[in-house]
Image (cartoon, rainbow, N blue to C red; front, top):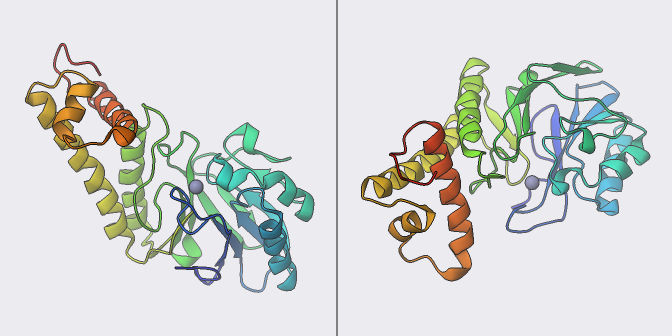
Length: 268
Ligand SMILES: [Zn+2]
């Protein structure tokens, strides 16, 4: 399922050939441009794959355009490792929330409006997948670039034990953004474009909420720590998967603890 080239009027995709369990078909590098303008904004150059980065730079050149700036949705290497080389190729700065992910660039603030040769993007902070994750609203196309906060299919991984509460808050916030700005298209960091944004966000919310409900039930039934919750929620878990199950249960217990939902004596 390739999505190379597809997108919206102002957004085209160059797919990086780095497929994998975490990256689906590969990283989507988004090339954004106001129709008829010269200045281009690139979102997520991708890993350090010189052929991919050169292909992105060439596709911009062939449009008679020029990269004005590069933005990243979050710090993970499959989005940012190629930033330095891409900046060398284009001479354009790379702006990012995480100072380590910048190349001669500045930070990105929630609510900030970024303009480039007539193109307008709004930064929406959506911590959870990582604490520096952002989405970019491309209102002119009723589109939202979601990075790894929402993928073209499957679910995203949450970085760290404390990520679930901000992640759920971010999903609810994106739901509001989609309704308020009548967003019709999600342009994810991996996987195909999504044309039913609310359905996609709601299925992400339902997935997280139903897992939390299972953990609540396990606790009500007497589970008092991570291992006991795993035994109740994932009774058939194989040893290989147990560490992954443990990290997800730990994050869920932490979430319930923060929300004041854990009874005395349960390790959160
Ligand atoms: Zn990614």
